Length: 107
Length: 125
Image (cartoon, rainbow over all chains, first blue to last red; front, top):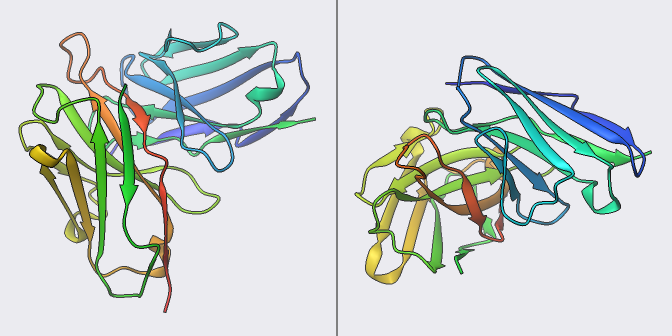
């Protein structure tokens, strides 16, 4: 199985801040990496595919980068609606696996 | 517009079998490259992928739960059913089904979108 490790597990930030979340795969997954956002009581929402391609409708303040084993999700100019938990997920092989999540909290 | 909705019991007893149904619309599970997956999330914990069924009836399971899971589809009813045997309190979670399909002709280029609203299943005597 491919293990996905996210860091940090939580962070505190203010509106307007730049936030970076890291996701590391236990083996190379090329660019087969997706990101999701989950708010309390809601199902996850798909944000980014292929490590760096924004899903239609996702604000441009979100960006993704990386390939191989190391990936990042960046939010430039954090907005109140961005406070949530973010998960990475590899689609390289089954079993499909998720990172442990990063909770973005209000400072 | 693709939608999915999970249904099933909210409470099961330990050792019982859980049967969950995912009813979907807006796509066909007979279309090449499409799958429906089940994912769960214990309260306050991370997401865990459980199983998938492809358009061609190929099935994959989480290795750690393979012995207790069965996934089936009824294409005519637009439903996917997941059964999990020998339920335990640690299986208490919100269970989601999600749509997934290949893109760009690449079987690895896929993602979960959209998801159902989820259904909370509590395992307790």
